[in-house]
Structure formats: structure tokens, C-alpha cells
Image (tube, rainbow, N blue to C red; front, side, top):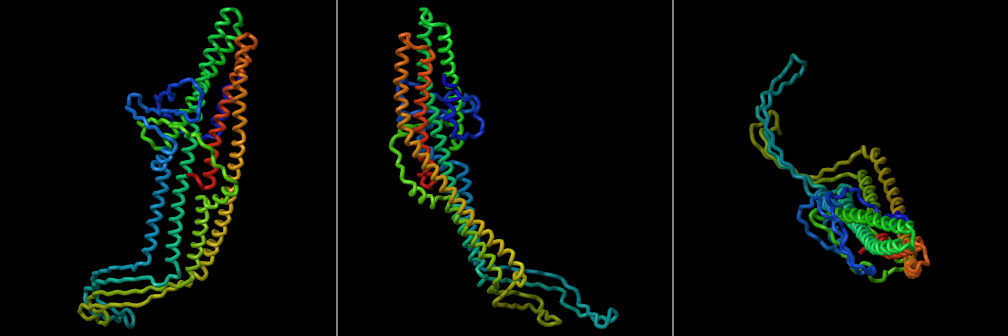
Length: 472
């Protein structure tokens, strides 16, 4: 007999579930089952119910493309990435405003004392009476003409960061879509397993009735009845565990889609495995991976570090500004003693500043910027190697999975024929109950292995597209 854990090592090995608790008072997720062969085009449904059994519910039927559209529209991680992009777009506008003139307005009013001069020591003082009120009203403007490229490079850096934010939105969308795809297929695989288990449970119930009938006629021992009962109990326990796993996966999918709590999910998996997978040669995927969002982000960050290096070098250059001012002043301190008249005065001209301290202070800053550029260039190479390794890994594993499917199909055919032969022998008292149970478990395992291989192949193909930056 195959242990119960055998059915879960295939199911849960490649799925990472979130730890968010399942709402209380949740209900069963199974749909009414009609006996018959399981096909890839069948429709499977699972419902995630509300935390209150009395609360009204609505049902939402989703196919995989619809689920991906919803997750792109609703997911919080994607919304956060879009807000970050909007911030960088506003930052570009802010940096462009550095080119605009700075306009100031100044007004003052003060009371002043007389002027006291000590010409030959404290004992010899001369007091000059002044006008006790002083006031001015002045407007000024200052516009940069040349800053050594500081403003130009600041704008370029902001634009590069906006491009990085746009790529980050694309990367987040692809990450979330891939996660939703894996959860969707995980739920599909678990619900398919539930159908297989339910079918075999009905087979076990019929077999138990036959064994009990044989026992009543004295043709089998009590031990065979116990073995049949144990097999049925194991199947029921396996299905109970599987149904719990379905609820967990659907709850994770519900959370990822940011669906309202009162909406129950129904998964439409019709034609989910239909159609051949278009697998191209490895070189085409490796070439496409060079344009993957992760690679482009790293290259843009390298460009940002180079821009920062230019900003550091610009500190060695002077700044030239055009300035102008015009103001009303009282009294006239152009002469002394001041004249008690209101006067106006305007100025316009050029102003040049140069920091001598930057000749020795800016060396360290420039050196740091250069090292950061080199570090980012190395990081780009690391990212490239990692992306290429992922593409090669997924492409190789996909080819292996495609080769195993015919083997799994043949195994199902052989297990089905073996089960038919052993069952016929058992009905004629030519085989033991243990042989019958082993044949049943072997058939269940073969069918589930084939289902797992088909689903894993489809998911691996999407993983390959994701790794090469071609996820639709």
C-alpha cells in the first residue's frame, strides 16, 4: 500500500504558501462529482467562503487570463510600484525647475539709534544724529546660466530613475502574474487529485462491499476485510488532507487577487492544458533574456552611477548666474549723514562663484562615485549570469518534462491493464487482497503522476518565458 504522504510530495514540493490565516467557518470546496475519466478540458471549481456563515456571498468564476488581469489591476505590490513611478516622474519635473530663475521679495522696517564715534578713546566721542527710521522694499531675481553641468546631470539622473521605476512596475507585474499562475495551477492540480481520490474511494467502497460479501460466504478471512477497510480509511484521510490544501491555495490566490471577502472564487480550468507548448531553441531564449526587465534595471542603475560620477566632477567647475534687483529704500544711506528721502535703486549683472575648497574636498567624492560605477558594472554582470543560468535551467527541465509525458502515459496504460487483470483474478479468488490494493494504488499513483507531469510542464514553460522576459 502506498503511504498517504506519497501523494503530497508531488503536490506541495514546488508551491510556497502564504501564512495568512484561513477565515473561520469556511466550507467545503468540492463540486458534485460525476464518475468518468478525468480530462484536461473539464471545469473544476473551488469556493473560498466568508468568515461568517450568515453573510451573503457572490460567486466569481475566473479563468487564468481573467485572474491575471485582476491581479494586475488590484494587487497592492503593483499599486505600490506604480506610485513609486509617479514619484519619480514628479522628481523629473522638480529637477527641470532648477533651470527657472529664483525670485525673492524682501521687506524690512527698523528703528535705529544715533551714531556714536569714539575718535581718541572712550572719553572722546562724537554723536551724529541719524534718521530714526530705516525701511526697504526690494525684489530680486537670480537665474543660472552655467553650473558646470550640475543641473543637466541632475535632470538626466532623475529621468534615468524614472525609467528604472517604469521597469520596476513591469518586473513587479511579471512577478505577481507568475505567482498567480503557479497558485492557479496548484489549485487545479489539487482539485484534479481530489477527483481522482473520490473516484478511487468509490471503487474502494464497492470493493469493501464485495469483500464483506465474500466474508459472509466464508471465502475470505477477516484479515482481508480489515485490509480493505484500512485502504478505504487511508483514501478518505488523503482526500481530507487534500481538501484542506485546496482551501489554503485558494485563500492565497484570493489574497493575491485582492478580491472582496464576500466574493467566492470558482476556477475555470477548461482548456488549461490544451494545445502544444511552443518550445524554441535555447539560443532564442538566451537572446531574449538580455532584454529582461531585471537586466534592463541593472543596466539603468549602471547609467545612474555614471551620471553621479559626472555630477561629482562638475563640482570642480564654477557657477555663473544672471541676477537683477530693484528696491525702494528710506532714507538715502548712499550718503552720510543720510538724506531723508525715499529713493529707488536697481541692479542687473552676472555673478560667478568658484569653490576653492572643492579642489581638495571633491577628490574623495569623485573617487567614491567611480568605485560605485565599477561596483554596479560588476553587479550587472552578476545579474546577467543569474538570468542566463535560470533560462538554461528552466529550458533543460522543460525538455526533460516533455520527454517524461509519453513515459507517464504508457505507465497509466500499463497500470490500468494490470489493475483490470488483478481485479479479474481477485473476483475469481486467484489473487490476494494485497495484490488488489497494490494494483489500485499503482493505478492511482500513475494517473496522478501523469497529471502532475502535464501541469508541471505547462508551469515550467511559463517559468521559462518569465525567466527570458517573454511572459505574456
